[in-house]
Length: 201
Ligand code: GAR
Image (cartoon, rainbow, N blue to C red):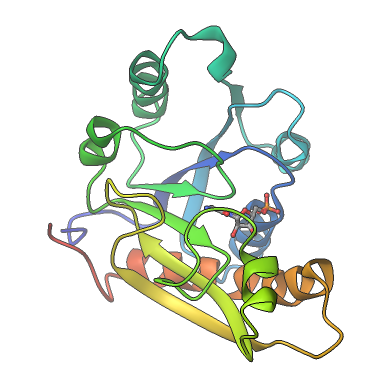
């Protein structure tokens, strides 16, 4: 499906907060490890720290607050129009903490990825680190996956596993998982850009 995409591929990155995964992608591009360019970073929150990261990297930043819309359908329609201004080859959800409507997801089917802090299909949703500890799991991790209409679902592209230590808190475990997120998300995008795989739903 991405056979005809020219390198570097065009990415639009959606964030809601810190943007450490965004930073990992920026760093990999700057180190010439990732044949991609981020054409815009879009946040649903004006105070997302990731916007500052984008600014520092010279990337266009846009804010589209969900508070300015009366329902999900209207917000997602406006978000779709904003994203499409940039004609991305791939939409990257990097801590974008919104549930997306089916229509939105289907518009980008086969070209929208997410990273989730668990070994999917385990622990969809929130508080994944605490839930893994509470369940007595010995290992935990993160998953990059294509996005399909169901929350935190869709074909997994890459996963990384970390051990859960006896004295772990949700915070110490999150830190260990984050290190792996920052490794596998740029890697998954690189594999997509180099046409090592595609999805045809
Ligand atoms: C990441 O841990 C990511 O896996 C998670 O949000 C965090 C964002 O961190 N995403 C989800 O939970 C999606 N369901 P970041 O803003 O520092 O990249």
